[in-house]
Length: 129
Image (cartoon, rainbow, N blue to C red):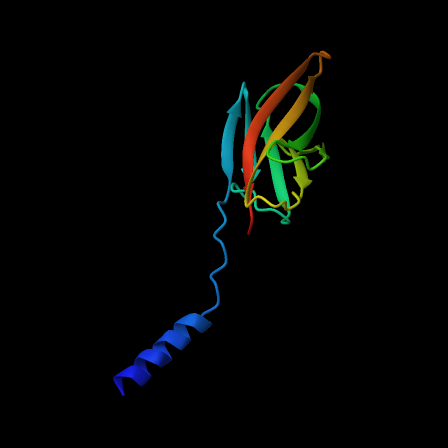
């Protein structure tokens, strides 16, 4: 009877569905005088993602950017930023590759009202969900 009970417990444990991966709500990075927010912070692939750039009181007229894979070539992902209240925001989706943890490079160009431009860069990792 003990062996039967143990087998039933083992089968129940084996049939328990995997728990969904927990998402890190957001990750904040300071890039010069700007704050960049990745949401969700652990950047799962094939999932809608949001980048927010807080410019504070700076007179910014445009923000452009792109992402390229560092671990593996995945093409160039253009980012379309739009002003959303007090911050600039872009939505994107990262593709999955053969690496469960992939390194990416984000490049953002900020244009001030004066015409001056600043280039910001950050490295981050994505993960499989």
